[in-house]
Length: 289
Length: 245
Image (cartoon, rainbow over all chains, first blue to last red; front, side, top):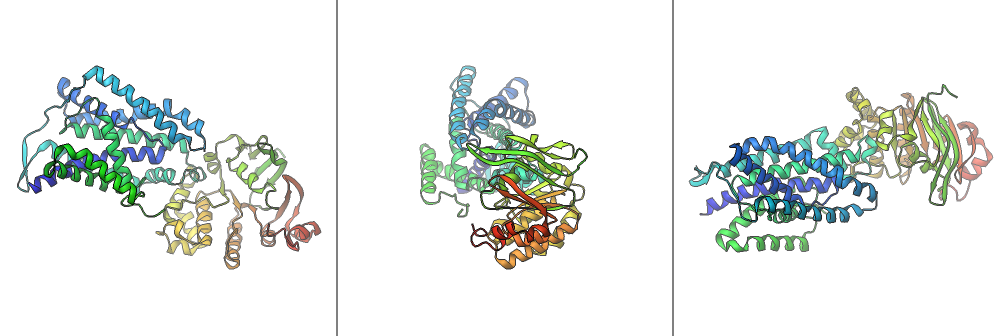
């Protein structure tokens, strides 16, 4: 049982890491704390389900369609909803509070629409549920694919951010937005790209999670909070930290659920969150500033 | 001067609320020329550089480069036009490595083609940066960080280099090294507009100078003449308090 718990925990943690990376990018680069982040994810999960049930489209193909759509929609949200807030805020730092309020509103708008369309019940679809033998335990194929995708997308993005000029420009804006114009970087444009990229990751996370988890119209906020916990655990702006913290949270949740009580998983998440906020507010992997 | 192809500030006025920081200032920097901007703290020197860099919007007047009006462009476009600013406080990326700072310096389109040559030139100028490529810039000494800032500006392949108090807070020996490096940069034909509190060294380096006082140009001339000027000597070179404050 230990081994299967470990594998399940890693699979869940991989999805969490992917989801947290997107929130981290939106907050780190665009300075927007997007409370509607989980809703974007859940929308993607429903879209993948619809495409699977109605059009018979494999979620692997949906991913290819939905991720660019997630980019485009987030780009649009930034342009229409966030740009005025950014312009109004200037250098005052009001953007963080304003964006929290604005996206808090967006959360309920999206959630309301999802409730009308899909009702409040848990949903899922049956994609590659057959078991595969992994180190002596049976694991559903969909979970293995989900984990593979998390590693591929999360790892690929991490490499792109740390090893390309494009990624360097994104990191430069995240770390020192005031210096970026000096090297010809247009901060607004990069911020919008960062927000869109985060949205694309939310969609990727939603589709990946929908392959093996049940979901409902009101669950978005839970994922937003989990992503937030992971981002703070990993150290704000630390992508590698978010990846590791995501895996850790998946493992902890799975172990608590298997060995203690499934009802305590959320409590464990927030317990851990409180411990870190109290004793290591810079995150597990953040150095002293 | 309709055919002037250098940097031209014409009747530039900058106001912060009620405070008039620059009052109809006219300054020119020709291609390949080195110009020092002298003045006490609060005279408006930094405001002038920020206005050229697009970081402050002038209330009146204009900044032009050749036929282009730079003062209409957003800050990130200025460096693309060939004007690189090393601001007060350096403006480097302290949490990125020296190497990453340099790569970012070559971010503007005009810098991409000759990037490798520029890098070689920069490392030749500041050998220490070649040794410390992987070091996080923020962990270096003040003088080294200033080198990173200047090196990064050079990576953008500029025609004009604007320096805001590069020797501020540096030890005398480091300041000496810095001015030696600036001397070599000058010889490459790059135009420099230098704001400095170290008047003696600045006037040795520069071709010409301007005196700025309370937001107005109160004097200008060839650097060697300014160095001899009793007003300059009184205010900066022999003065008891002016150089410190």
